[in-house]
Length: 605
Image (cartoon, rainbow, N blue to C red; front, side, top):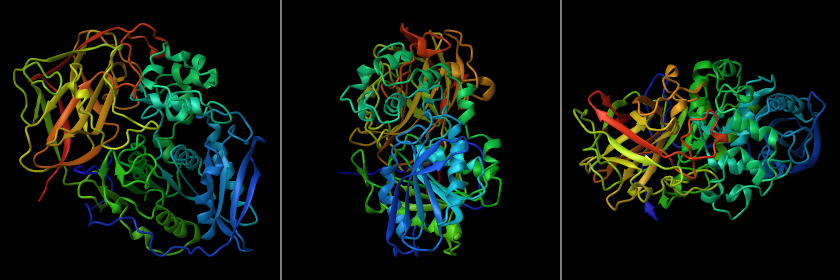
């Protein structure tokens, strides 16, 4: 296997938390936790009543004892039986674990809609139901990954009085930050996911691993218009799928009803959170976003004291030490369930185990393959450094004349490329919707519809740790288009490892909002006019570029099939478009239009 040359750390622009800088290396450690001393009783397919009379089906796993125990809730649309092993583990340590199917899924009552605001009240009701049972101490926690991270945050914003802590693992952010739209661009794996969860039980109604079909996504998602996906995948219901496609800004009432990443929502959260994610998780940005927001907006001293763990993992955390042929070593796998138990022991059982004396942030440093801790984020020693795009007007492909340096441009010719939606730039391989590890993307960089800017070979190591922002001065002949910027680490053997990216739909730039995520409205776009696009990388990253390596920036207008194609028509709703338009793209990099990235450079002693 390859040894890793990558160091990936993360940040989010905005609020800085804490009062001191990074601390010595330390991985999250379970230490002394509640022992496995109880036989476990299973009570399957029980009913939990919601306030509107809907019954959720729950599996209860509890210690065989007359004692009372704290409860832990796991609320999922993926079949409650999938958490059985973990539930039994925690039950053996003195917790009652309630695995529940969400409203409308499997045997639970009610109608299913992935983003119905009823999930918020169901979370509240389920927590309070658990607190009132005869075996309960009245204290309740929650845990679970991915969608179950959503159910925890949705519940926490309702402030059920019996909820004492949460463990949202790989929790996605709000929908227009990440999925199904990423800065205005629809991600194809949410098409897959919609097909899988389109009814009460899983369906094979889409290509790829979610739908179960051995269908090539590249071909499947060329069918137009996108709104007709439901006609070719018969399980998809028109009602909520149409809302996904037709409400394509964050101001849609459907999206506003389920949103939780707002100051007024965070300010209702009273409980502490232990968030976890992996550097290669497609939902990465949810974890640091929630961490920073709780430091700023949390309703109580406890909720203002969150914890965050980031490992060398993909969406399914802490199961593999290898990603995309890069081996991060045995220390990549930790006793995560043990650490979660330590968290529950303190907050639900009142055991003084010193967990609040641990540093609030644990990060796995790729390349060195070791853990480090931190008290504040971003790192205070960060040197925010502009890396400018340069060329003689021929930066097309990795064989072009594009270069990257810290020297500002003077008089330089712009770069041009053609974006044809019928021949989009291919994305890196991915599984289950998540680009799994530092994929080699050198092949797509050989295309003329990719502009490539690369530093000279580095004479010494360069480390970046923190948020990344790109400012592009760009023009298009079309009425709308997409801009995609990727950061890569080029090793001496030519491998170009994909580290991080920022994407933006041109009409979602919302200049009054600084071009930031979650643009509330569509902007007017005049063809062939240069506009500044401020693109915040949705997955901030970090990396030690080793001596002998190169820093590379790629720019394209597609990355398919990971992102669905923009057809360049300029229609208010891309989901209705049927006729692709070829776009002529221009990237400026001169003294008056100095396109650049701001990289968070960390001094190396």
